[in-house]
Image (cartoon, rainbow, N blue to C red; front, side, top):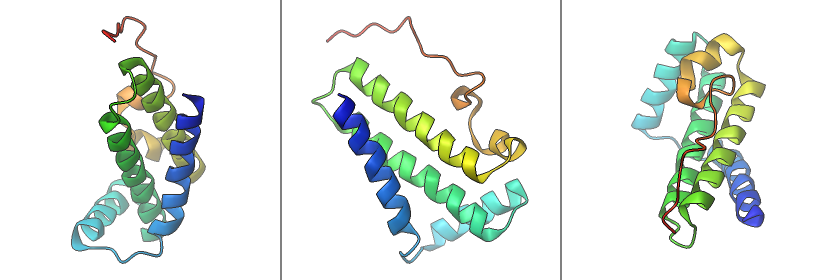
Length: 121
């Protein structure tokens, strides 16, 4: 399980590096523009924030589609991905901007693990 989480985090980090060299499409341009306006920041910072979120979503899809993982393992992997995404955004944005872009359910100060979750597996 720990190896899977480490592999996912490594893939996220690698894909961030690759995404800067790839050509962007109009949806990406619109998303970056939206984030730039929302955060009132420069295009470079908005692009990095968008890339972090996009990589998180891709990794999340991989975890959710992995039928080899139990629900509990998926939840742990999602928690790890969320923490990594938030850590990357913390290094990029001040708290006021993070509060605009990170859903309240995923913010470190308010987010708590669901201890009532029971797996059927």
